[in-house]
Image 1: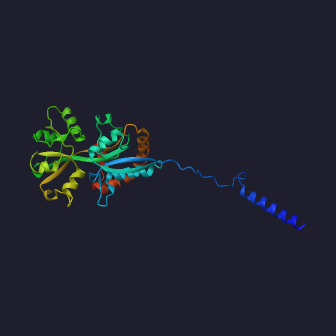
Image 2: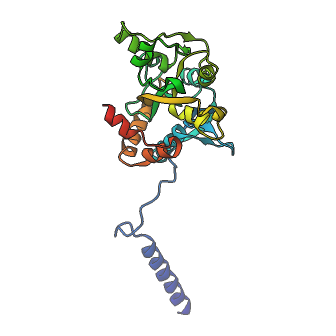
Image 3: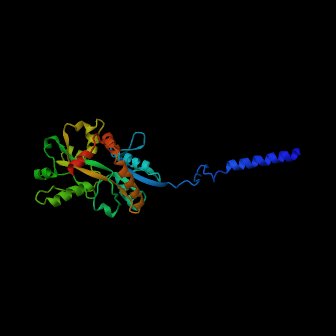
Length: 287
């Protein structure tokens, strides 16, 4: 009898444990987690390593700059993607993105029709740049391309593939009777400040952030000439990431993320951090 009672207790205990463990019918069992992790797509983001303050490698060897941090915001938003930031030259960004070595590149790039043949532009722009003249202080009354053309001044050469060249070229086409003397240069990254400072030309076109980094900043290579030179803004231009033509899905995901980011003040704060001012109000005023 004792054996039978012991067997009955064991069987009853087993039944009780089974009943406690099987709760699927009552709906009290926690949902099963998918053991298969979703594949995260790696994205190679090339950036200009010497384009301070838009994109550069900082003193700790880390990617930095407005363009880089703006793309980091996109990366944070996109759970299905993981961005890897790769420092390189401006020329390699163009070649590498077009050939598929990189998925996307950032280098304070403007929009040009010519570039649409090689790259996929998203719908949402990444940032803004103040564009202006670097001039000797005695020419500080020049505030527009029209002023520069009317004065008959000489302009530092601009690479024909550069968006700054397109900017002036489009002005010249619209103003055939008052054209800027535009000369195509061989160097993509011509040292405009040096050309103006040495008197080789009357003026040059430069991004304000680059002027500040080279001249206004006390650690800039031309800071000693800050009283001899001026920067006069004449345009605020949208800047874009350049995607490889095949990356339509990635570009669409970027657009979705950037739309949400622009509902916040995160980009405004990045501009204040890297440029010293928020350019969005200037863009709105010019439209």
